[in-house]
Image 1 (cartoon, one colour):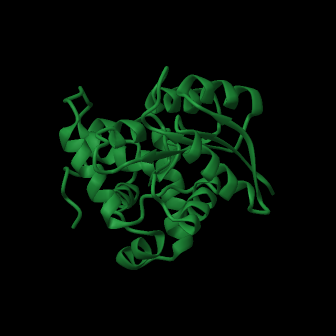
Image 2 (cartoon, rainbow, N blue to C red):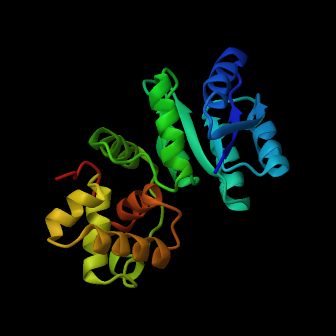
Length: 222
């Protein structure tokens, strides 16, 4: 199956470079490019791609607002681009519905792999450094009213809450299975139940839910 992609970045050379790399893959097709967030939203509405590669910082409409609109209106998955050192918006991008983020100086092979991972329905949250980064941005985020953990997570069984906690700590399905002494198939069932019961798109949103519900506190990656 061909993954249809929209590439959005306000720097023409960066946008063209990403498009060239992705379009060269036999299972990818770049259906449109966009130079700002508003163009990105319009391109998604017109072409209905599987994935939007989206820069966080863009004119007219920034990537966060564009991601929020795209995720609310469609099943298109969003992979954000960030410069890491200066972007304080990663947390907000994930809350908006993005399934992960990449550094703008990403290597060719890592870009291709990331697009395949996100297009397949996963998120780029397995590496511990990513989970720690999310924790850092969560701790910086302005306080938001939230229901007590017992209310927010009451729909989950004890095993499902345990699974959510391990997802938030950056464990893969295999690592969760080992820790819980169950099969990976059982873990996949727990993960699916967590996402469905909490109305979440993917593991990225599950991590955010775990922090916002109080199940895990920023910096707790034990």
